[in-house]
Image (cartoon, rainbow, N blue to C red; front, top):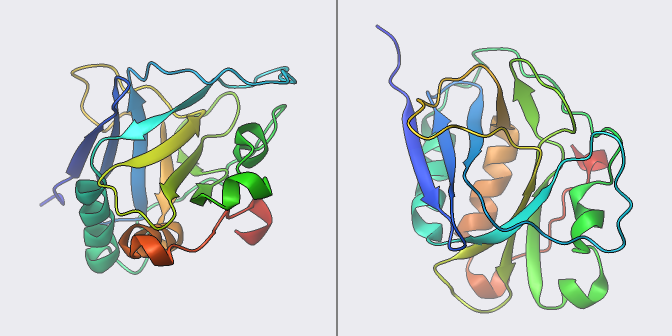
Length: 196
């Protein structure tokens, strides 16, 4: 009997949504669906296969926090399938593209960056990256994001398409800690690739 897939569609304030799915296996699959707010990057130093950068606000932090915590609590200890290490090609990492590593930004926001994400299935172009941000000291229900390179999940499509970005179990544990931390105690975790 196959394990049922758990799915969360997280609406974005500016339009579109993220789709997260897991079947208690090797990680949380991530897609975007109809995101509308493109970030105007300055200076423009993009070349080659650089992927567009999206930004905005996930309307409700609580379902995402509960979804990640549920995965961490119940997922199998041994990965159920192979994950490919993501590679950033011909573009700057998301931390540099967003300026989130600047001291002026770190004073007001805390970040959890997953850069790059693991992938499953065929992959072409720049690696998927996701960065979540919270305002320091304020307990908002929403959470900010920047995303690039995520695959698009067409409207009406089931989240079992062959290509997906994946938050590995280890990264899901770190993400759960970040999402559950009280607003005043959120630590600054940029999670550069060297710390993977």
